Image (cartoon, rainbow, N blue to C red; front, top):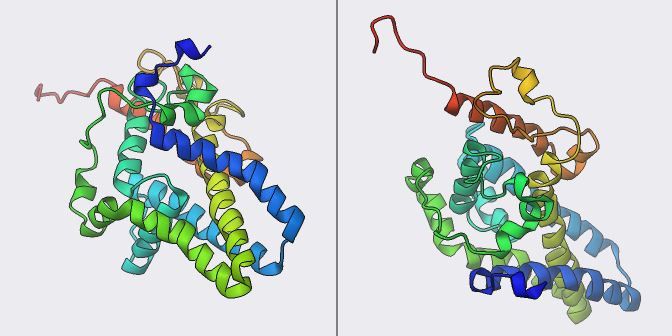
Length: 271
């Protein structure tokens, strides 16, 4: 089995982080809870950071920057750009570039997390291996003009470490010494990252696998069948809780995929 793994393409840093945080969450976190228990501070702080970071991804990275679904004032943009990196899903610039590429080429070879390559690939496999060649940032020209976005892109890893791990440790230590610091690191740091990441990953995998398909080719009454016969976006009421409603945005993949590929109407003058 291991002989078939293309080790020359393994993204070792990302793979180590994803696997390491997951292992810590299912081993070290339970051990900590067994020996030291949990208090109200750890619970409240976990959900506060989970909410701040999670909504920075779904509401900020996704709707605000990727889809330009609304305009935000400076405090909201700063909040997203500061707490978003704590999910360790990279910068707004890279996240948006990959997501826009996904919507443009959904269910096709150029789709970074193409579900036709399997559930595991769409969920996390695409992150474990380097894309060769690396896709250019040729679809985020609007964000390249934003100084705050570019500032975050340059310092995203530092911001991620400070907000994602250092902040919980410092506040945990202030609350209950080294025990509080360790607990905050494991619960509000490591476990929070794992929960948020896999909720995001499920949007790429489960939201294209489970549920009903109101955006299938039949929805467009045959107009789409010749242009893009594979539309995997699905809806599920239960899954909206995990996806924070983001599965509904997947209909844009179907609509945009159809719009980008349909023949352009010609004017009576032939323009």
